[in-house]
Amino acid sequence: QSALTQPASVSGSPGQSITISCTGTSSDVGGYNYVSWYQQHPGKAPKLMIYDVSNRPSGVSNRFSGSKSGNTASLTISGLQAEDEADYYCSSYTSSSKGVFGTGTKVTVL
Amino acid sequence: EVQLVESGGGLVQPGRSLRLSCAASGFTFDDYAMHWVRQAPGKGLEWVSGISWNSGSIGYADSVKGRFTISRDNAKNSLYLQMNSLRAEDTALYYCAKLWMGSPDAFDIWGQGTMVTVSS
Image (cartoon, chains in turn green, red):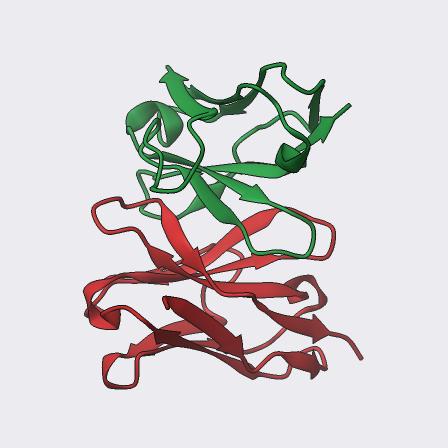
């Protein structure tokens, strides 16, 4: 199972919106509405931000939103804040029932 | 408080074995599937293995299949990963993670990880 493809880095100024893409295949992202997104600050464990493509767990800011089109899922962060600077990973359910994560995206707040 | 605490990591020579443990608390452990995810230094997340609530369904990444064995003891609220024939490329921080109820993909609770270093 190959890793899902994400851009290595995305940056934006405070208050702006940014979007991170996550591209897979019809055997993972495109085949199921089970895409999750995780935020990871340095030295910390990942934190679930989005599940099932577009659902937010309780306590996650509504500035985070998810969507999917075909084999590509996206995470949008609106009203970018300094605390959003972190690494972000997508993951998807797969036809083989094995887990797969994205390559990861470093978000920089300028 | 919902919590996962990993242990058992350390420095081990190539070819040797190590057993990781993950102690769960604050939730009904035997209601949930559990997984191991690793992260090599400076690298991304890699799914390693998963086990269903009753151990009836188990899966492994191709990179560890045949060398690693996942198991759980619901009576002890514990998850395990037996790692044999360790290689340098297995060096990573190993996280245990709880699967979100109702979603086959989302991990809502993570431990802080236990570091495994494979080196001679």
